[in-house]
Length: 214
Image (cartoon, rainbow, N blue to C red; front, side):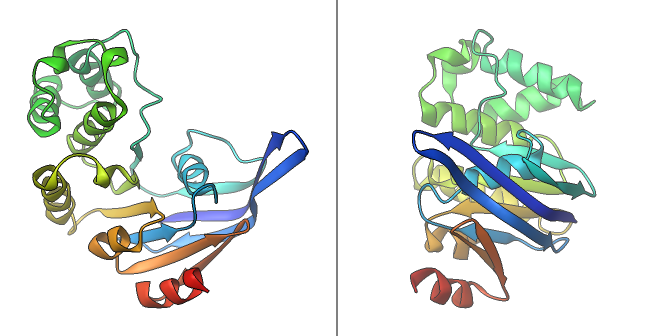
């Protein structure tokens, strides 16, 4: 389970401070796929980075039980001078996983071809996202954090993404942020709405849609 307790986050802008998360408290139920929907710029990616521990809140506390992935779709942790393979080897060692298994899985899943052996700084944003997704799927997490990366690639790759999550549904859950309710419906049974710095957890995607569209 992941619990947020009075999380506040603001960024400096030209006219002062932009409050992205305003005293947010929320418990994500275990083994439940939860979507977080909000407009562009609402703070969805910031919320996901805070959940992952990539970014610290200004105030509040995050409690994590279990193994939580980095945000899939966030490639900021890659070393641009290293190849996809070298980054995969590095991550495998950090998590104590079999290097060969992680590299092999990531190579096959990301479908980067010869670029897997090239520096990540030569990748397009889509290629980085595919690498991040494949590398995340190569490691067993209790909670996978997804930042709209499922829109990457063609229909075949998107199906592979869905199948990967379904195969882990018995022991893992997903928190996915998106402005697209169609994406949320494909993956999640529960949805939260992020608006004006506040988060409302709804019992269904239909209820979240009513609040979001209102």
